[in-house]
Amino acid sequence: MARPPKWRHVEYIPDITYFKPAGVPLRELEEIVLTVEELEALRLKDLEGLEQEPCAEKMNISRPTFIRIVNSARRKIAEALVKGKAIRIEGGTYKFVRPIKCSDCGYEWRQLQNNPDEECPECHGKRRRGCRHGHNR
Image (cartoon, rainbow, N blue to C red; front, top):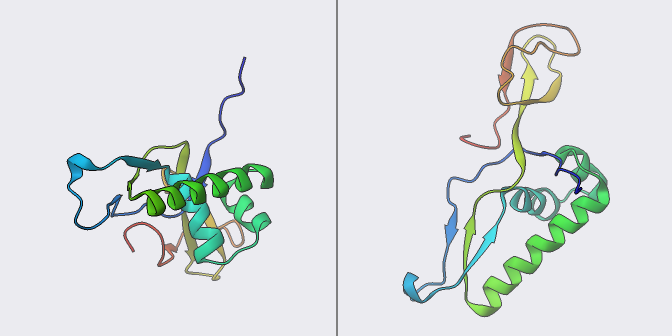
């Protein structure tokens, strides 16, 4: 039996999820689907400039898995650019994780979106605020 996929953590959900070559009607386009975790891997590695290990830790996956994900994303982007295909961002195996900062002590940590009552792991305070990056900034 195959091992179930591990949930990947992502901090960014894009508002724009479709890109297409200019001047080509939609009906004539082939599509490449880029998963949300593939976009997150590209964001962490290529946009944020992090090394592989911190990227993997942020996504809650092993380094070899991170490398496979980022390589898959780069292949898909290259194919879309070279062959004039549209890119649709959707799907994947992920959980949205948001960065949080304690208003009392300034400690920063990451928390799953559906866990709003978590207290600060450093000072156990309840006053926190979301950091200003990621979805709906």
